[in-house]
Length: 401
Image (cartoon, rainbow, N blue to C red):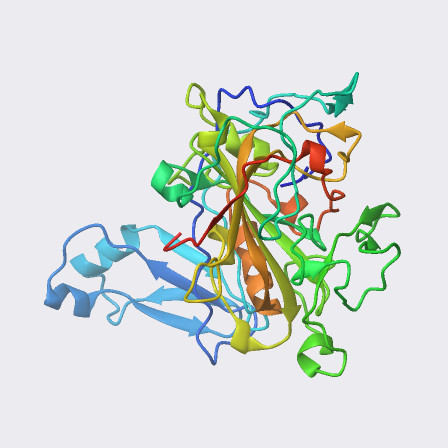
């Protein structure tokens, strides 16, 4: 879980959280509609009889980009009057767009500015740890860090702990390390600049972003790893590359409301005042690692709202531990004060379609809050040193998360 706008991190002394419930993206347009055609839906509040339905307005689609309501009879009937009195909900649909985006009505954001300012600090002072446990850690099965931590992590699905996802973002390469899955021997279409690392430049920026470890799926001879994908919503993404996705969760989110998803994620985590009393028990992050392929057989439609837990592959080999927020403003000398929080990390690297990511980005654009700062991959923090990693890593398989 990294900074969206490179904000400094702070110790978890939390007293407010985020809100949830993002409005779902509208369904894709039916085949046959011309470009920029508009679909108008009429919501009727009053009860109607079968006879009145027959007399109500019909929707007429016109290729000039409009949809109009036309009565079958020239004379206005009582049914026509009711129909014309109703608000018309319009959704702009472009037949060249696979995933249209529509935001809910704009209203005050109760989560805006809720991030507590906890600046990064030195990790070690006078040979003693100056912070709580850090992330991302080595999650190889059997590994344990050297920092003694009394607070255990959450080992059950977050929703069972009255927590909801408040953001989604991802990192170039991985911040965690899982031997044999995503490690220094992984490969991808972007050459490594340092052993185990990748670097890239953000779109429209000269600033280099540190990359992390890669998975082992990439094969330049297979079409699904190198066939170009036309991205509509995500920014600067690459087919064949490895990304680590983070879903911050919080008990203080605006859960179940149009304000649930927030950028930066801190605003979502701390949205509701007076809720957070134990950060390790009330704030957590799901992490799952993917190699992007241009192959629709790997499509998952609802990636924005949480990690995939499905069958015998996704979420069945989890490392769970307490750590901190991540991102490239921290390393093994400068650390995050936002700790302890729970991390639930899938040790396995999975393949996923580029369209799954693009659909996720479309859903992000459909949230009430502006999530444009999370539509591209963020840099990856270097692997946390053993002395800054918690000694409480546990093994679990999540079910129905």
